[in-house]
Image 1 (cartoon, rainbow, N blue to C red):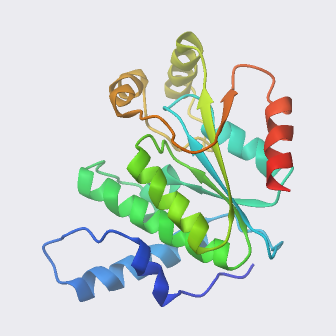
Image 2: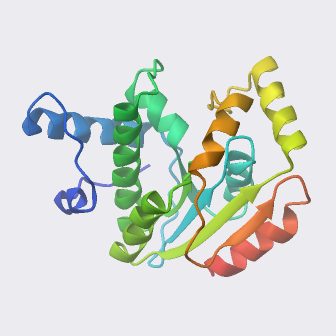
Length: 219
């Protein structure tokens, strides 16, 4: 397993949040967070000269992580999951504050940039609800010459509610999200239209046709 080296150009694509300590301390902590996250990821040894960035977008419980896991069975991808990044950098004690969330996304994008520049296919597994947030990922794909594939996951409300309830009752170590139905409902107001070409996947249906479509787009 080869961990990509830190590239100084990475910081050019990130909005730097303002913290109470100086930039030098922030920069060092940021670098350490990126390295720590890379060590926690399931990296593949397979690389390519034509990497793909698959951006998943959807509310909690709509099946993003499940779809990501299914895709990795057919395409050698590294999944950068925001929930994993959050728990890695907070030592499994996340605060879910706005500052922490901003930092999580900065770290995730830096990790994705390093992976793409090293020739890894990457899946961004996060809600990615706001277009301005997705635009940072579009820019990342352009910057790294990666093919961009955007996938919006959906599912009927009753299916989502059942999934989230099951998540609370039967903790799956593979499922790192803490979101419940209330979080799902509160985030609906943040869901913005996607202004690029994208695929819609209803994860309550058979996923095979959607997976085949994504794989064709990745070729």
